[in-house]
Length: 193
Image 1 (cartoon, rainbow, N blue to C red):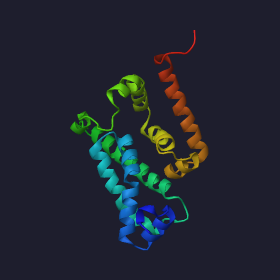
Image 2: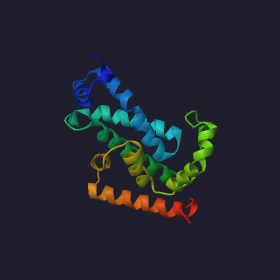
Image 3: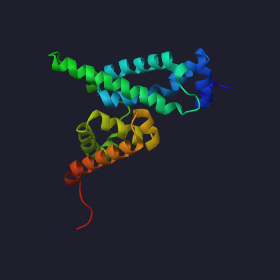
Image 4: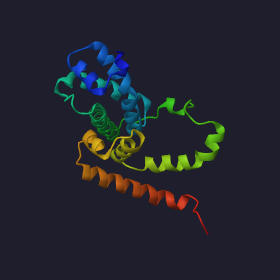
């Protein structure tokens, strides 16, 4: 059986036993999740790449404490979430200490994953409004929305990933959505007379 087709539980068991091929398969499987979450929280490609490497290093070191009967995605997301928060805190301390945060020149390059010009024309303005509104949210709220809606985790999995009670996650998601609605409602066309 190919390692890429193994269930998360079996992959986790093999990783706990020290199987290097299983570890490579796990890294391949979860790199997109780790990178996307880190990138959205940190907003800089280089920072996201650094955090992604840190996440897999931390996971490798602590895999012995992972419970293979639990889903792997929330554990991976929790590790990423906390590593990105630590990086945000360190970056804000450096910026406060007088070192410039700087802009990543790679962010100015065109993104090949962008929609076609026709698709961009149809949804570009709304997407830009949503992106600006999301940028106005705190990093933690962006991460919660990202895990819930882009990564498809349930409220319980998001709570496990970020180490918050489910009720707190639901409340923060509700408030973040309400904030977004409040910001976007005056900017979007209304239906009806």
